[in-house]
Length: 141
Ligand SMILES: [Zn+2]
Image (cartoon, rainbow, N blue to C red; front, side, top):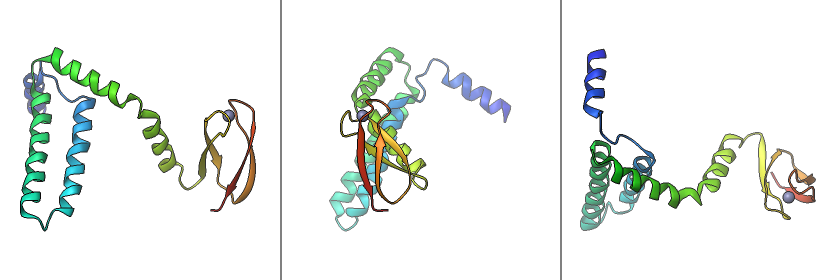
């Protein structure tokens, strides 16, 4: 087993490997897999989505094995720049899922700060830690 890992390391030396863009493409691959469910009655639709899926997969493998590090690095940088505007949204999503059982989330009406509040029902007054204004929230569940 150690020998295999060593050989893999030797093989991957000087190659791009897995970066953030690889993960992004993997998400696209999974989206295609989900889309395929809706195309299962359409012959050509199914084939086209499958081909697109394999193109994405091929591109992922190509990027991982590529020796043109500079070009791959630039692609990855472009991708990171593209999703940077979305990162707060993804992070909030993660928090919402993580604390689903114990907390509720709201945004401050004054400054837009993302607030994590202990779960409880009914009306509540919350003081924003950033701007200090009091916001009223009503929790149904
Ligand atoms: Zn605020």
